[in-house]
Length: 134
Image (cartoon, rainbow, N blue to C red):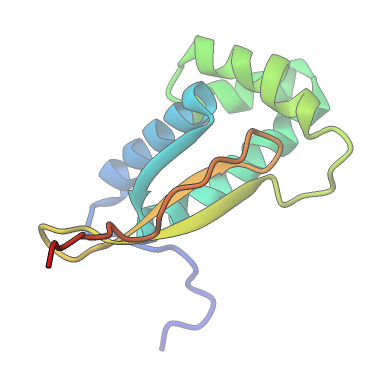
């Protein structure tokens, strides 16, 4: 039984999964929102929220921990500590939002957007509407 086994494996080895999630969080920090599959978005959310909590601490140890988690991407760590974390200073968790978009056309994978809650909200249609002329 898989009691207390929280890790979503995503069909990858541990090293590949760690690299994937780190790259997804870096993209989320840089672009404020990313479009990905629902499973990946749900896997990215805990890591992104833990990094925002680190960013709110503003200590050297927190910065170095974030730097090691984000694969030594110094620009992303700087943005995390200077832009993302101050926006979430008054919030006690729940820094990200996942919006379901429907299914990808090629393989019917459920797609989603993950974005910061404090960022701008934009409307996107959940599924493409096909118009027919009669």
